[in-house]
Amino acid sequence: MGRILFWIVLALAAIALWRGWQRAQRRARMTTKRKTAVAGESMVACRVCGLNVPRSEAVVDGEHSYCSEEHRRQARSGG
Ligand SMILES: [Zn+2]
Image (tube, rainbow, N blue to C red):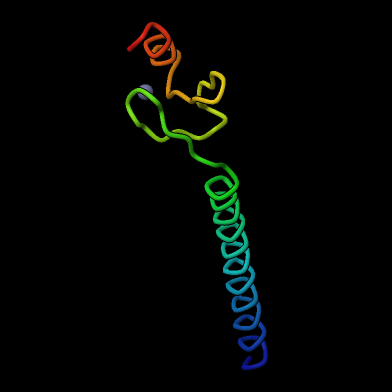
């Protein structure tokens, strides 16, 4: 009887360990993804309002960047 209990406890411990490891893996992957998204993407400031936007989302016009198409137009029309 004691031997069966030992195996049950061992199995439960193994499952708990495995689950914890999986969770840690998932968390680590998510953190890495978030880090690369922040660190790998340079931010540019809008010329009109000064808002910082990721380069991929910014509206680039020549050497200037804008947060939106509206602000690009505003800057072009002499704003
Ligand atoms: Zn703007």
